[in-house]
Image (cartoon, rainbow, N blue to C red; front, side, top):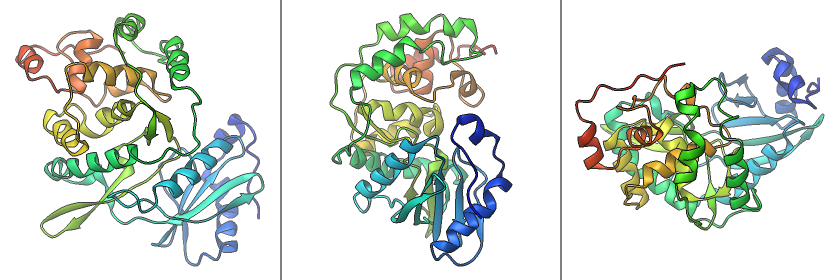
Length: 315
């Protein structure tokens, strides 16, 4: 039993778990995997648990670069971060689909850990990100970071479908006002979320046990990393963000929140409208206020907003 056709985005999006199950199981057996093969419920690409020790990830023909990026980065980070990452055990191709067979990391998603423990673990996550950014960059895109920023800036409004006008109208002038500088590119994960970080019980507390999903990795400015971190990990918590940045070794200036929001708007997978559902609302309907609410590092600005009635974004 083989894997189905997925040469176009439409073909891939139309596939159901049942369409892939038999082919994924056959591939796992061909690779010598014994035991149950079951698909994880989440993830943009098909990923299968092969017992307790292995993971099989499939990359459709329509997205060949995802395989190249993840397999290359997993090898580059293996054993070089203070937090474990999956180890590549085998790679190959079947019916135009690429695959990576990798080790399975133990633990539960960081978001399932008590918040107090998440904050206690934040410096360790920050340290891991600093180590990642310090590694030699594999041959990844974009070929020009300045070119990437220019292209993303030009399409920033168009890539926010359904965003309320009060926010969309501000995007061009906001991006023009933020100085992103010209930092040398580093190796970025780009989608550090609570779902992509694992933790295990350790005595009376928890410890980090893994970071995974390097499929969207790229080369770019270090602060681009904190766009996703602020939205999906620290989520507007000053204490959480401060602890993570301390572990990273970064003392942010007052421009840090503005640059993080700018990078969020430039992010390849940005969806500002969806973030309003789970992040705190700013006191004023401005992108500057939003930046300081989601990346709260300025004590003075937090004090200014204290007691203000939050602005609730429209649809």
